[in-house]
Length: 332
Image 1 (cartoon, one colour):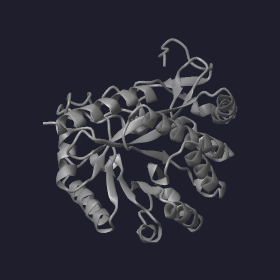
Image 2 (spheres, one colour):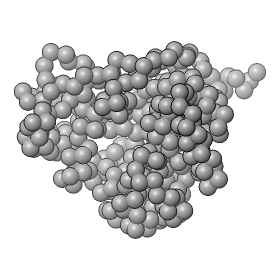
Image 3 (cartoon, one colour):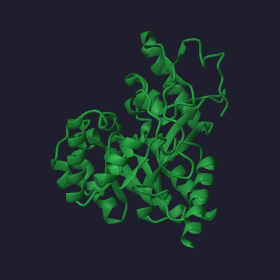
């Protein structure tokens, strides 16, 4: 996608600053974070910048919030008609190896000028006006389509993680949407993983339990995302059919300097292992974080220190290269 630096999308849209402190690329051939230490990004921008800081972020002037919502609502509708949504993918690695076990699909909105708008700038509005159900439908189908294409190109076993919103969980059609996508692209249920935030599970527990149980019974994997950042109710950990426990990046930022933070993360990993969950750490950016997670028993990790979200073609190259390296290493 092109980067445009001299004009805004609209006269009342402001271009937000982009964090310049992203962790450098992983050390060649290691599949692990570079060892250089960096300062932490601006917390206000970290979540959006973490998805993909290489692209501009856009936001309406908060003083014109009603106009922003009206413009964005119309833009979402038009973007779906124009096929201007796109998925980027962030690899998830097995700890202690270069093996990519899965990818997380992350949606972006492409403007008519070719710039990308990150989800923090449009998903809340899509949630408010109900557009999120149609967008979520598109994301699930597109993610399954891309996984089938990668399989056809020679990529080995890989799971596809897709984020699901609260509104989608309250829609009984979600089961049919997933079944249709899996059938259309000749996939298995266990190829797909739904990521659901802790807050979402807390707010929609009664309905979510039934829908997730049915999907889980068919073989689909369920991940609880951002654990510890919401209400942290342990009830749903026992009640819901979960497979994967994702540690939020906010916990990792302090583990190299704060002993209590290390204890918290260690306790979370121990609890997840006791419940027989697989554990994925998000936001791994430094060698120190990686080493700590490996010694405490974390299974998988993702983050800028390993690989940034990228377009399907770039991720396919990475997948094929790591697969080729893995096969070559087995011959020795």
